[in-house]
Image (cartoon, rainbow, N blue to C red):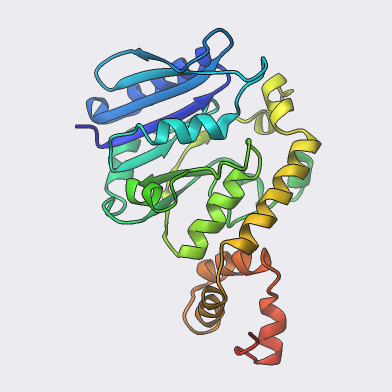
Length: 278
């Protein structure tokens, strides 16, 4: 039985297949890894499954009016097919380091509702004086690469909220995980991210389409609407109390992100010494 299920939505099936081979070559125990790709199909009217080997499968998801159904639909589809207790999101432009599977499996108890935050090369840019030239926003609370438990998936029924097409889905994934305080920080585990921003290279048509200004505006509106409707007053009170009485600096930063998104200014609350504002 697979110990880790890698779920890989892609618009670039050939690159996804190459990426799969790299991930498996770098794994300590590749036979214990299930690798599931879901790519676009411009011909099929129903989902088509291709068995590659014992634990490796490819699914081809029908396009809608000649356009991709979007990464979130594909991601959620294959997540529900995954068999392992630990699920790991893989993408076309990310490669792990050697024996990544061993380190991830031993980082936490995967029988619980848990999310493992995995770092990447973007974090190196934040130490540069001129990192703004890379068009990268400093968002230390973001979970850009994640492993998560099957129980986490079962709790909400999705990886990326189905209202999203692509952009801002990871913002909401991060927001939910920090709200629920299920994030495991392990800075020893990092992936290499070959995003064009890091290579100072032009975006292909898929990057351009996914990251268009229009898509970002829609994504942000969906994100803000979801956050205010998926947190209770009691959760807000509990987070404020944790922020001021219990949290370490890393957790404080994550709580501030959660609260700021729903209109709570923790600095103002702190200056007024008022924890009973609701």
